Amino acid sequence: MPSAFDDPERDLTAAEVAKIMAAGDLQLVDVREPYEREAGYIAGSVHIELEHLASRAPTLNSDLPIVFYCRLGARSAMATQAFRAAGFDARNMAGGIAAWAASGLPVAPDGGTVANH
Image (tube, rainbow, N blue to C red):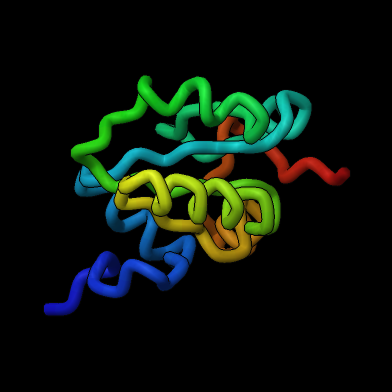
């Protein structure tokens, strides 16, 4: 059966990320601003603002795939490219947390929302 990780250049869908997270086989990193995180986030994700990502890279497990997300996917795509260039198995979640919420997946905490800019 093909894995969501078979094509290293392909963004993952929210549904794929949810399924892989349930198996515990990835690190999910939220690269949004603090006010966006406070409005709502994906449970189990780690929050590292995009501007602090390079300095916090050593805190991530290089043995596990990393999936980055932001609100719509542009900032997380930049993070993904940088981490791939550094040798990480990094992916972008297509559509960001907006796609996650639109797919009916839970946004934490209870009643969490996707922050507007």
